[in-house]
Image 1: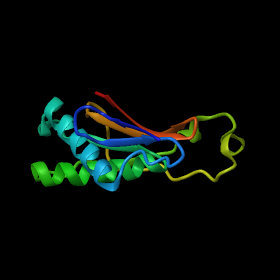
Image 2: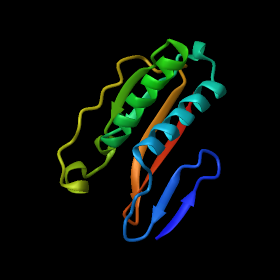
Image 3: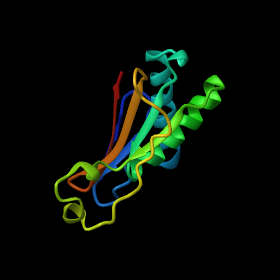
Amino acid sequence: MCHVTDGKSGVNLAIGDNKVLLTGDGVRRALTRISHEILEQNAVSDHPVLVGLQTRGVHLARRIAENIQNIEDYKPIVGSLDPRLWRDDPQVASGQPLMPSDIPTNVDGRLVVMLMMFYIQGEPFALLWRHC
């Protein structure tokens, strides 16, 4: 088994037969760090909207919103989006039913932070990007 750390938080990643990528504490630290980075790069007055891509990105968005609320006493609006709605073949694409999309506010002129979880060669990765 190969152990790798991210060099900043000491998050322990294991690669090999026992595919432990992050412990529960490592996930918590990583999400806390992401929450702080969102706040450092954007004023709370921007009222960011966190949009998670179904399904795992929604869980990430909710946890980051809770972290931001604990840090700044302001809870960002959280929405969800199933990007398969914009495919030509939504049912064929995955064989799974479409998930609801819900963005409970107008995002015109607002900071939107989109979060998703995806897999590359069976390994989970989180991706975060923003749009103003």
